[in-house]
Image 1 (cartoon, helix red, strand yellow):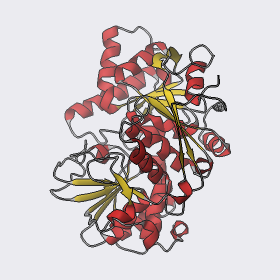
Image 2: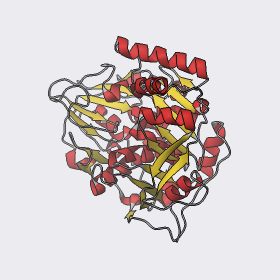
Image 3: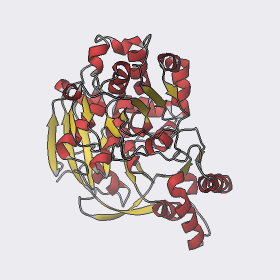
Length: 427
């Protein structure tokens, strides 16, 4: 009997033989991450357990991204404790403005193909874009990793999703994952791994692949794994990662379910207010007026997303009454966008640009709170009621291209209708 990517990676880290779905394994963790919203309990647990040594602490990154910048004294003091801990033990530290955990870990070369990576955030599934098993855990679990280098896992069943055909211009991985939410429902893949394969995946750039794996968290997935190819190897090498150990599923692997999507025919998708799985084609809601446009987060704050927005807004202005906020996923992306002139295009159009971080997405910093009855179109990952601090506002979710096109017209808009079909090259 063959095995899936998830079964192979977990098995490789728990004795060397492929594991089987449903099996409980104790596995060696290659790298761990803890962000500031979960660090307090983790550091207290280490102290409570009286750990005399932390042999794996240098393979655990501390990321200050949720309280970025800290909105209160408690958060500020958590940051102080994290900096002191990193200085004492030699942990990699990503400070305020360095970026979002799921972006800085691969950018920092901390993971490679075949790795097992855990982080204190559900969107740790992002690392599957690099053929690694990435999954979210609690802060106390990371305490255990720092002390032992191990965690226990129940090996998940896997859903195989075959994407057939390259996406149309103006359609992105965001649209694919929204489509999957319409098919499976929010939490529809609870504690299951997703395995994305096919020509649709092969045609995607790394930025889009990261979106595909990241957004699997909304499906409830334990991991979202892609096969490695030359694009993967080149990206990892450019960012100083260790030699890849690519893992591929066997032809006779057992899957809980197989799904085939004709991605070549997929139109842009939008998730309607309050429900991430209430998804329709963008043209079905083209008369929906908006007041705010948000581009960023760990899901869609990468350079390609910012390029999409700049391509659409170059030489144009936001619609009257529309406010637009852009938050890059990391300092490196911020600098790259500056070098390419993308932020000049966006700010000239009327947008505001924030430092890299999670604050706006999860409304921790209070940088943006939606007003009563305001309609927000966002490239973020979630749109539940009150996500932006006001339960009397609405949040709709789409790709960065959809968000930018909507900001241009003042209504939810298919980017392909405003950019003449040649908008990719406009940036």
